[in-house]
Length: 313
Image 1 (cartoon, rainbow, N blue to C red):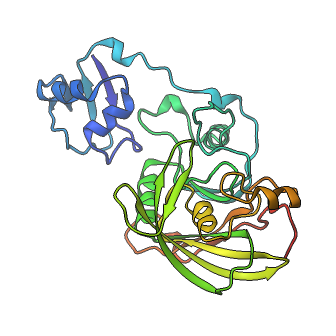
Image 2: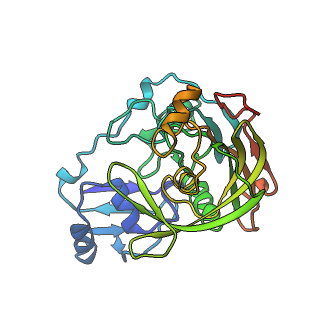
C-alpha cells in the first residue's frame, strides 16, 4: 500500500486524473477497477472516479508495488542555459524563446528544451522540486515551432496552469505574431478561413472548402509595411492549428521568408536566410474577472527585438 498526501498543486483535480499522473504505469482499466473494488480510497473511504481532491486529502492505493517503480526525470538539473525573461511573478513566467529551441522533448529526444531550461531555473530559485511534487511540474501553456521565436507562457503552479489554459481557450489572451512574407500583400487587412489537415512527414495541407478530416482555420493579417517585394505583417491567430501561420500564408501565396518547409527555396537561398522570420511578439491579457490572474488584466507584453535575420524594413 502507498499513501499520497494531496498538496496545493495536486488539489482541484479528479481522483482518476491525479492517479494517472502520479502512477502512469497503472493502466486505466485497472485504475477504474481498483476504485470500484475499494483498493483505491480517499481519506480511508470509498471514492468515486469524479471526486475532486482537496489539499491535505490522503489517497491510499492498495495495488502492486510494480506500478510505483517510477523514476522521475531529473536531467534538467544539469542544464545551465539562461532564459530571456520578459515577465515573472509567483504564478507565471513569460520568456522570449529563441529560434532553434524546442519547447518540449520530441522524437529526437533533444536536450535543453525550453521546458527543461525553465525547470532548471525554477529549481535553482527553490520554486520547484520534483521530489516534493506528486503530479505537477511547471508547464508551458502555448507552443511555438522550433524555429519560431517569441513569447511563451509557463505556469509555476497547477492553479495558474488551469487558469491560463482556460483563458487561452476562451480567447482572453490575445497572441499576435510578426512575420516577413515573400511578395507584396495587396490588402491592408483581411481575415481568411480555410481548412487544414495534418499529413505525413510533419506537414499540413490546406484546402479552401470543408472536407471530412480537415479542420477549419481562421487567420487574421494586417500589413505593417511593404518593401523590396517583401511584406511585414502582423498575424492574429483566431484558430490555432499545427503550422497554421506558415502553411496558411504559403497557401495564400505569401510564404514566410526563411521557412524551409512551406517557403520559397529560391528566395531563401537568394537572401541567405534559413530560419523562418516569424515571431510571437505580443501577448495581451483581456481577462474576465474571477481568477487568481486577474491582476494581469489589461497588461500587454512584447518582445523588444523580433530577432529577424534581415533588416529589410
